[in-house]
Length: 237
Length: 288
Image (cartoon, rainbow over all chains, first blue to last red; front, side):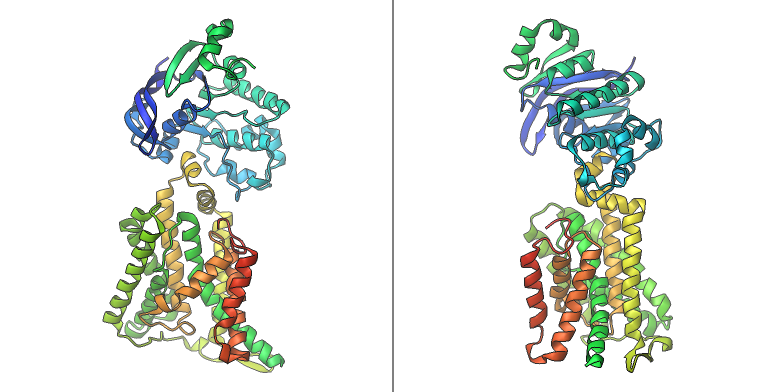
């Protein structure tokens, strides 16, 4: 399969501060990638950089043949990136259904399909965005990104701060997405166990660089190496 | 007694509606773009001058002059946003305030050069220059029209912001600009449109309200405090908040000046202080 997303020698951060240093990787269309690593190594910054929400000092970000590095976030969204941010960032003054529809672009994902994936959102459709539980907000953030009909879905710690039963529910939905949909997914995740189970390929980041990029199986079979890469608290929970 | 109450209420409402029509756009642009536009009143004055020129010099009907005021001022607003205001988003407040005050002074000089320092009155259609009776009391029918116009603009804005796709996008961008961008909302274009809409409505307000807030070159400076009060009390980024705020301020101001004229504007500032102490983000503030 051709490479869909390609990052080449990325140097990026916030203002003059550089968080990501000389970072390169490619992702084939339709493939899934998990990114793990300690807190503060630049995982969130990486997704924000792909989305255009940080300052790109150097390097190229390509989506297909398109160089998106100079585009504003809305153009990147239209080019095919769907973003589910860590804080979910639901629009509080929009209803659940408006949150889903505000970024709607035509494609395989429809409101009915999102409601089918997350029936809870259908029940809550008339509620305001700020009247939802954490799990519902996360479902809504997923649904909102899916309805932009992206080619590449960027998930930033989708399970953070959620009760185990909700995590399990969301993870099942995500597996369904992984298996039934052609879209590429990059998931940044603190739970190494979930991350390794989700994607066949895992990247470990360390201090703004890539410390490991390969088969998730390699790390599952070698907990000591995983621990060394991710450090205390970052290993298998 | 009842006559006095009715008179106060009627004129208070008319004053409130002018305040609302002129100020609502200021609140929307401040809420959406975090831009403190102290020149907002100059756009309202420009609308007033459009109506004056259209009805007096060009002999156009009042009902043509009003939409013209909206269109001309909205276009001027769009140009100013594209050329200058855009560069000041995210700049510190001092730069925004200095720029917008400078724009206000330039507008005052420009209006004085073009129209002279004296007050200008638009030509009002015959249908609105009579009186209407409310019980035993007679009121100028033009002011009844002003009240109806204020309510109509509130309704139109409510439909636009609450029920249309562009309104949905404006609300999303007020809530969280980066996230709106990240799902594909072109917030720059949205900002230009919103700025044009806000200034255009102010222009309409300047034209409609010329009978109550008279059109002089210094309009934007003289009434600036009132517009800012409406927005601060109503809450930034809200449609209903400034409406309620304008109602309180309009009626209280007219009542105070009618009943205790020696205290002048004391009452509205008293009410403002009380409301802001109780609700610092305003009555309906999306943001403080």
